[in-house]
Structures are given as C-alpha cells and as structure tokens.
Image (tube, helix red, strand yellow):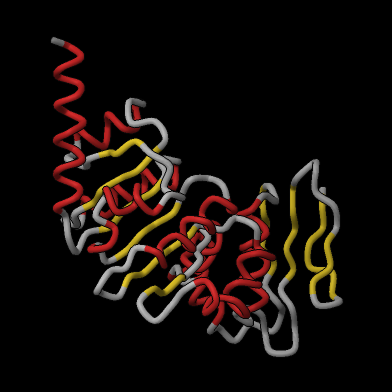
Length: 231
C-alpha cells in the first residue's frame, strides 16, 4: 500500500507539471533554489521544481508549499519537458554547479517551445559569468531563448549599494573617499568590492578603500590601486 501511494503521488506530480504553463521551472533545491522558490510562491507565482532527490527534506518542504518536485537530471531535455519547461516563462538553474547550470541552459534550446523563454543560470565564478555576459550570451541562447546568468553575491552587493544609508553617502559632498570594513572576503565580499568600484561609489577621481578582516585574505589591488587590506 505504501509503494502504491508513493507511486501515485509521483504520477500526480508529473501529470500536474506536464500540464503547467506560464510557470517557472527551478532546477536544484540548493539554498539558492529554495529561496527562489519561496520568493516566487510568496508572489503567487506557479513553480515546478526538478532535483536529483525528490524525497529529501527540501523536496518535502516544497511539496508542502504546493510546489511539485520531479526527480531527474535536468541536463536531459526530456526531463525539462516533463516539468512543462517548453511552456514555461522561465527556467532557473541553481544546482550548485556552474557547469551543470550552463548545460541546462544549452538544453533549453532543444525544448522547441512556441513562447519566448528566459533562462537564468546561477554562475558563481565571476570570470565565467563575465565572459558569458559580455561575449557569449547570444551563442548560448537563440531567437526563442534568452540566457541571463546571475550571481546571488552580485545581487546582494547591488542591493547593499542601493540601501538608503549608502545612497546618501554616495551623493553627499564629503571630501574624502569612503572606507568600508568587510568582515570576511568570500564570494559576497569580493562582489561588494567590485561593485563599489564599478558604480563609482567614491568621490570623482578617488577610489574607495576596503579594509578586510579575514585571516585567509591577502592584500588585493584593483585597477592598479590598493583598495583592500587584509588583517
């Protein structure tokens, strides 16, 4: 009886997913994937998830929230179709692996959908993300598929600089460049440094200075100017 119920539940999930349209397919129940699903559901969006493990605690939490979770390898176009990806408005690839997320983006071109599809692969390696964004985005997509890589670290950094406190500092008439203290220089810390320089956060002609407290960090130079010191 238990096996029958499990099989029935799986079949119902697949049937619901295949009939979905104008929804978002989220591949991977990583921390990023779970947050994206939660935010989409809070906005009333329809979501179908794909993961290699459809019986995990994260999958159970999604099912409880009304999000069907299909088990499968989304680098296979058939698995994407089983989630109704050919009728979806977006695919978010958040498996935790840059190479897998890119492969899913490529498979999206094989779906043969009739509507324009937005594919958002999470790419944590900044050099890879910048290369694709600046030079190869068109090669990954097609006339029907737009590939737009993203990084949660970059998004966090942008939100930080848009905060009211830093926005006021950027438009003030201070005569000294700003100094920002970073406790740790992981992916998000590096994104904060890079965003601060790219958005001209400092006084014209001056660069901001970032003081980094991280036992594993070393002094770094950006654009020929030392802006980060490790302690």
